[in-house]
Image: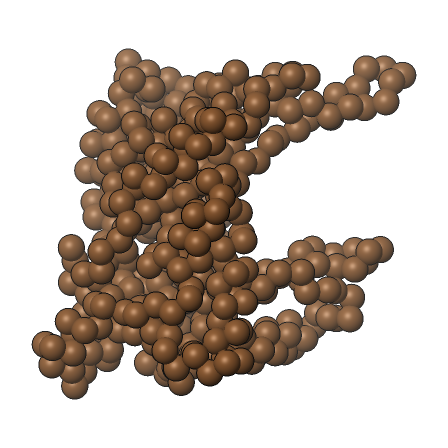
Length: 378
């Protein structure tokens, strides 16, 4: 198994801010067919070439890194194709570790978060995709498909009073870092996280006859995960910690499902050229009826793709992501499209299987959308 960075790096980054084992063989045996034991051992030791961008940023900037590492990884891949060094790149494809028993996880996490929960009013429940416990006005929920953990204080989540003078961002990062190393230690242990973004929530406030002003009412601090020094892209593998403006924790969500052993590697001729990826995305959007003359490309990224809160994703592999935004005066939404960074048929088949299963999950969810919410009211 590949040795990953410890979470000590997260502690160091947070400190700087305050100053300002599973079976990896596919059931179909498609990926490792024809390989002997020595081959399989070598697969667990991918060689990176210039794409460990998160570590490079960490050496220069202890602050939130945002999407910059993923953009740098894209540029590094483009440079590697240009100078021929792409032949030296070898990246791993991984299987995610099993989610496990959501009910047992819920029971364990309820005990570990007991200081935050009103245990006198426990009301358990479950639905098609998750299991939860309502504890007074608090809810702790574990997703059965992805293992995502979500805790919310419904009395305060998006119910905060706006104030004109919130605390400094450094304070919120400090509180979130402490919370990460305390309340969230168990589900994130062994996962390499780094400060990603901070989001401020605002309300428009106006008195009669006066111009509306915006006042902040809540903050969310986010950490992102890395795989082999590369950033994770997509909505998964994130830790979001929600805070009231006084610095009180009012919720968290984490989708940091652990990564298992490498099941194969891609590199050299197996890699998709960034320009070919961009052209494929442009064709996809055009075939979908999008007039690309009405948009401009604003961002290109490379990283390990993780899907969101309730996904049934099993395989993680490097993907390109492209963002296009409508031109000024054009009514439309920002477009985000992803494509695998490989041309290898067997890996694409595995990713397509994940995509198909995820589509089936969403269809089943929509089919049951008319069913009443069985979750008890706080």
